[in-house]
Image (cartoon, rainbow, N blue to C red; front, side):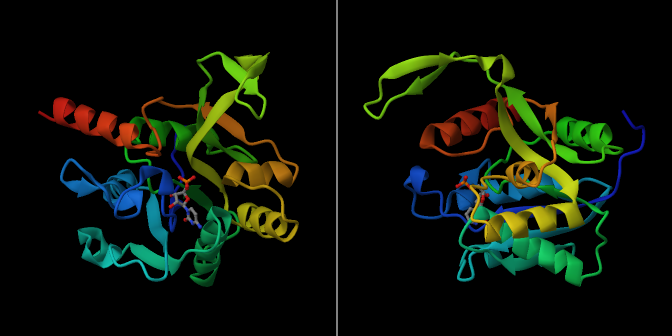
Amino acid sequence: MSNSSPAFWAVIPAAGVGARMAADRPKQYLQLGGRSILEHSLGCFLDHPGLKGLVVSLAFDDPFWPSLQCAADPRIARVDGGRERADSVLNALLYLHAQGAGDDDWVLVHDAARPNLSREDLDKLLAELADDPVGGLLAVPARDTLKRVDKNGRAVETVDRSLIWQAYTPQMFRLGALHRALADSLVADANITDESSAIEWAGQAPRLIEGRSDNIKVTRPEDLEWLRLRWTTSRR
Ligand code: C5P
């Protein structure tokens, strides 16, 4: 592990609607402990001394962002999101290039709806990957027994979980390599669901860094209920 933590850009794709939350607004704008989920997701980066700047990708007609306190933070730039998450990230990378960021600069991409990233995990990711030729991501080994199901929802196979990890964020890659991998995989119409899958598609093997399992992405209403409960008990 390197002793020095590298400087980095942060990219937060926040142009999704989060339909599974069935809420009146995109999930990143739901409240958690007096602030929006998105503000919590940005907070860990804004508090870090290695941050060079942060780009947030938003729906072009997003009415919620301007009312957040951090919208006026000069370290944060806003770009338009795209059709898929990969398009939203790509727009942010194009912006960074236009601002003079270098191909070898590190970029950390983090989900807008992952508000419980710890400073300890962020520092671990930065330190472990500082000298890595490819980059990587926070991840958690699968802990439950895994089933493959048929189209009727019946188990047809128990999958060996020893080689299965859940991909979390941040995901940390070099700006130039990530830009090329995302752009090329989008042109090829590959199935890209995170930055790592684009780098894998380009033939590289990102490193998985084990992180805390409570760095969850808010996906369902019960995820937010769990975080709210934790917030009130841990911050008393
Ligand atoms: O929907 P899901 O939670 O998988 O989205 C992951 C992240 O990608 C979220 O932060 C979401 O706001 C973002 N996203 C985006 N642009 C899209 C779709 C999703 O920025 N077109």
